[in-house]
Length: 104
Image (tube, rainbow, N blue to C red; front, side, top):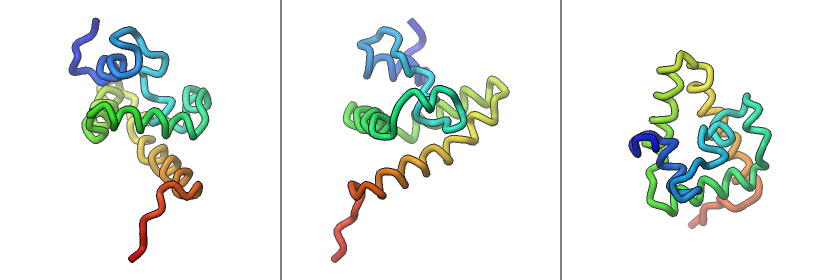
């Protein structure tokens, strides 16, 4: 098994009990320009992110490790698409009304 410090291993632990999780590259969530992105609907992407947060994993560190991995592989194009993905997911979630803040 991979070193548990790699983000893929941490995702495997959350979603596949240490086995290889089908979305372990995380591109289905963080790369809107990939074929993997099209494998899941927005609701599923949000559900995956919620499960990660509920597991206690820190999204900031997970995303940092994801970006670092692809930069090290000379795939800066993948690393820089993260913000586009997160904006799309946030916009989708807010448009559904689930992200409404209580105005006081």
